[in-house]
Amino acid sequence: MDAAATCASSLHYCSPVGFNEIGKKSNGFLRLSQRSKGERSLQVLNVRGFRSSRTLTQRRPVAFELSCSYKNCQAPALESEKTRDSVDELFILKTKSQDVAPYMTGRCIYLVGMMGSGKTTVGKIISEVLGYSFFDSDKLVEQAAGGTSVAQIFKQYSESFFRDNESEVLRELSLMRRLVVATGGGAVIRPINWKYMKQGITVWLDVPLEALARRIAAVGTDSRPLLHNESGDPYTKALLRLSTLSEERGEAYANADARVSLEHIAAKMGHRDVTNLSPIAIAIEVLVQIENFLKSQEDMTIARNS
Ligand SMILES: Nc1ncnc2c1ncn2[C@@H]1O[C@H](COP(=O)(O)OP(=O)(O)O)[C@@H](O)[C@H]1O
Ligand SMILES: O=C(O)C1=C[C@@H](OP(=O)(O)O)[C@@H](O)[C@H](O)C1
Image (cartoon, rainbow, N blue to C red; front, top):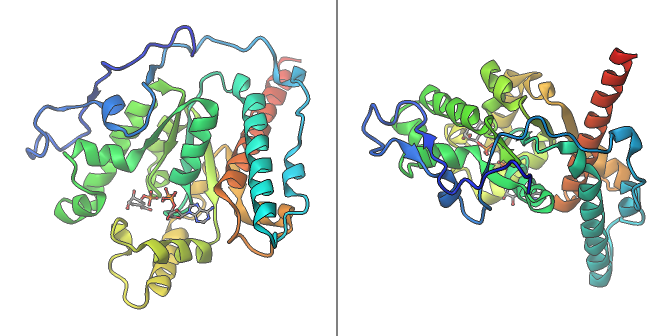
């Protein structure tokens, strides 16, 4: 743990906007560190001055490059091959996290991407391996609303009311360190949210719409209110709405510092499509892209100072 970091078991968040006024929330405070299941205690953001003694250009060689995990990975026929592949992936994930962690200097990671892109699933893995705490911004808004679900908040109040609270949650998270945050799919549409998220490193999980629609159809649209108004079978209605949302959001996701394209990972691994990419393989690529981003930042600093 960073020396300057403080265990925040007593850390309270001011309530996100609006819930007090409408009487949904009685005490006006959120106790994030206790309510968020399975999380380590939070650490307060007060280690900005900390710098690793090693620079990125001095980094030690990585024992295994990512491509090792992608070798011979096509549709393993035997269970034992699958097990071996996941053991390999876990090892590479661990190695890569040890390589990247010193250069993170406690900065938070914000995962952005369309609904269903795996921000929560992959975010939990990354937080675990980096020893960071994990937060899902939707869950924090729900907590601030006294446990009201996102779907209910949309229905009972409005989308803009949800967005105001989402921004407030992100503002509060931006004051902290050593967090992995799974943001809501629409967090990218408000420029102010980028100001908060850019306090850390932002990563876009870029997943083809068909794969998103398949995942969402498999779990249902109950928790995703923006998908409620379409008619048709679950896959078709998810795909239709996701296509519209994706067009509306345009290049918003591309503001992220790093992009993780599932199509790109699949191509590297020799898969025909993205269906069989494990969350661990995606988490590895997140760390690789963060490393690339940090390296490019360092190169720019060196170029500016020379
Ligand atoms: N790599 C993956 N392969 C297959 N299904 C996945 C993958 N990552 C996530 N999922 C599934 O997709 C659904 C949405 O994932 P989730 O992590 O909740 O996305 P988000 O937080 O971006 O909305 C979940 O049911 C999850 O189990
Ligand atoms: O794309 C969006 O606008 C939304 C995505 C959802 O989060 P997930 O991306 O976690 O599903 C949630 O914030 C809300 O339903 C709105």
